[in-house]
Length: 263
Image (cartoon, rainbow, N blue to C red; front, side):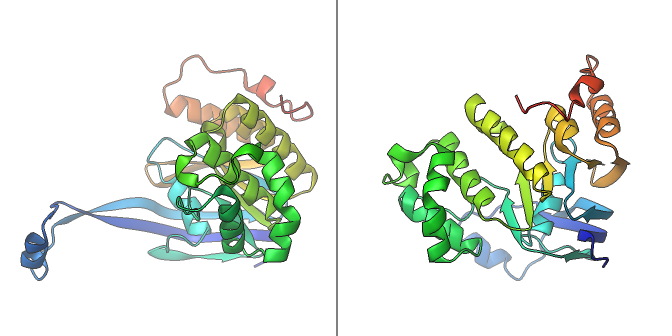
C-alpha cells in the first residue's frame, strides 16, 4: 500500500444470515439445535473497492439499509468481511454507535476512563485530557451521575467528546449530527473545520448532504449493497437526491462554500 494511503478497501463483501424462526424457550432451542436451520442470506455489501488518502475527509452516503454503516464497522474491525481485504495505516478512533464502550452502571467520569482505555489511551493521558473532554461535552454537572440516567443526547455528547480527543490518525464518524441538539451540532461542525485544518483523515457517514458537500474532499454513494458512484461530493449529493426522489433539491453550489464558517 502506498505511503499516502490511509485505508485501502479491496473488493470487500459482507453478508449476514437472518434466521426465519425464533425459538424463545430453552426446550425449543434444544430441539432445533441439531436440526436444519432456515435462514435468508442478506448481502450487506458487495465488491466495494476504494482508497482513502491520508488527510482526506471522505464521505459515505446512501439510503437507510444501503450498507454504509456496515462498511464503517468493517473499517473499525467490528465486523469481518466475507470476501476481499482491508489495509489500514494508522490508529483509529471510531464514533459509530451510541453507547459502544460505555457501562450504564458507571458514572460519566468512570466511563470517560473506560472508553478512553478502549481507544488506546493511557490513564495518564486520559487524566490530562479529562477537563477538555468534559468541557467540550458540556456535561460538567452530570459527570458523577450513572450513565443509565443520561438522555441519548447527553450520551452522544460525551461519547463524541472522548472520540475526538483520542488524537488518532483516522476518525470514523457515523451520523453524529443526527443525534445532538442544535448547539452541539454547531460545535461538531466547528470541530470538523479544525480537523480539516489539521489534515486529519476522517471517514464520515451522513444523510446531511450540506455537511458532506461542505467538508468532504471525496465521497461515495452506496445503494443496495453496491457502490454506485465515487467522486466529487457535489455530484454525489445530486445523485443522492435523485435516488431518494427528492424533487426540491437544495442549491448544491451554495452548499459548496467551503471557505465559510461552519455556522
